[in-house]
Length: 300
Image 1 (cartoon, rainbow, N blue to C red):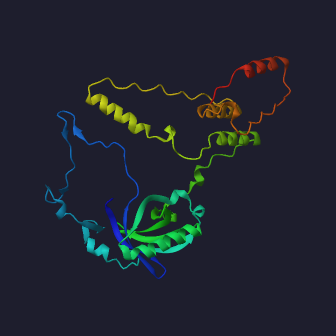
Image 2: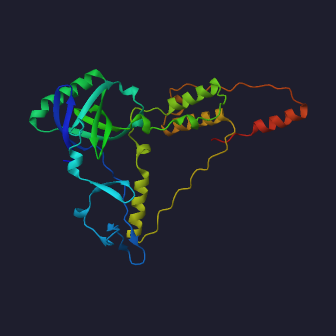
Image 3: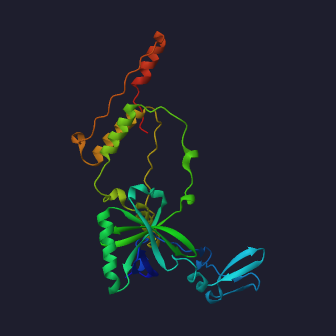
C-alpha cells in the first residue's frame, strides 16, 4: 500500500470521517543523478551551517522565519501542528458545486483519501454515495506544509479523491495575452470543426498517448550500457508556410482519416469550399494570379 502522507478527518457538517491520505499518481520518468565527469564519482549536495562552516545532520536542522536582517525566530513541527485553525487537523468541506464551474487551471495534484479504520467506513461511504448521486464536487479547506489550502473532493470509483486547488489570486489574468482582433470566416470555423470531428475519440488509449520520450531515453541508456551505436533520431517534419488556411484544414482532415484507417467513409462533415472572390484587375495581372493559384499550397 502507498505510504501515508497525512492523517486527519473530513468534516462534513456535524459528520466527521477519519481518513489518511496517500498519493494517487506515480512518476515513471527516468531520473538522473549528478556525477563528476573526470572519474564518474557521485556529486552530492551537502548542508553546511554558514556560521560554523561545517556540515550539519538532518537532526540539527529546523524551520525558521527571518523577520528582520539576521533576526530569526524558530518554528517547530509542534508549533505548526497546533495552529489555531479548524483545518489544521481536518479537511473541512465548505460547499458543493458543479465540476464545470471550476476552471481546470486551478486544479492541481490528486490524492486518495482512505477511511481510517472500520468505524470510519460507514460515514466514508455515505459521503461517496452522496457525492456520486449529486453530480457535484465538494470544495474544502485544509492545512498542509505550513499553509492553508483549498481543495476539491470528488469520487473515483468508490474512493474519494482530493485535488489541491489554487486560490483565485494565484491564477494570473490572461487578458494581456489575447491577440489583436482578426477576422475568422464561418467557412474556416466549419473547417476547424470538421478537423475536430475527424480527431475525436472515445478514450485516451493508443500509441498517440504513450510516453515516447521515456522510451527513447531508455533506448539511449541501453545502447550506451552495451557500447552499441546510439539509435538514429528521425528527421523532424519541417512545418510548411501557411498559405491557405482552408487548404491546410482540408489536408489535416484527410491525414486524420487516413491515420485512423477511415478513408473516405469517415462520418465527418465535409469541409465547405472557400468562396471565390472576384476583383477588377488588369489583364496582365490576371495571368499572374492564375499562375499563383495553380501552385499547390503547402500545409501548415
